[in-house]
Amino acid sequence: MTIPTAVRAVVSNYSRRNSWLEARELQQVAALTMIEASRTWKPGGAPLAAYQARAVALSLKRHIEDAHCPVPNRHRSPEGVRRCDLVDLPDRGEAPQAEWHIDLKRAAEEVRRILSRQSPAAVAVLLGEREPALVAAELGLPASRVYVEAQAARRALRGSAKLAQLARAVL
Image 1: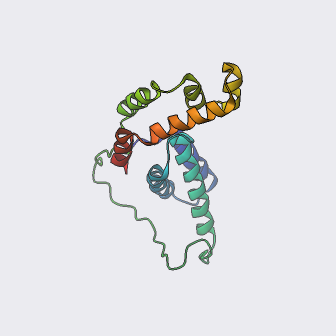
Image 2: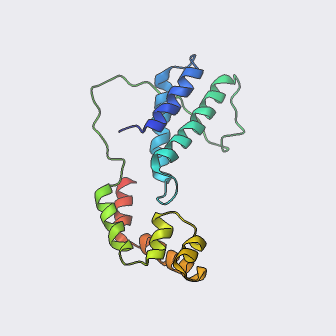
Image 3: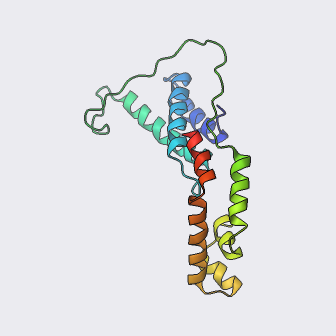
């Protein structure tokens, strides 16, 4: 599994500031958090690497706070949930690389195909991440029309069976 630069930077930062903790322990917490974050990430928001970096930062902060406190912080854990420590497994050679990412080429082709059928205003809103009202003013269209077209494009993307299949392959 390739680790994004942003996640590496977060782990390195926490490792430097908390030298009393082993770096491998922080790396293990980060790796598990990255996997969990990739399962909850939704396209259209923050990029996956940024989403994972934020999740890792919050998880490491919580982990370090728990390690500082001699009494467990039970108020954070839902009732009945038991925590367990990560075990440092012996190195048995290179682990097989799991595919934790969407086949970007096929996903991009499907997105291109869907957006090619949408209006230029909807594409400007979705791909350009621009405000519908600004796009409407530039193109001389009513803002309500741009909102409706952008919503139709979003529905078309959400309704794509091929994109859903690619996303399910990750989960």
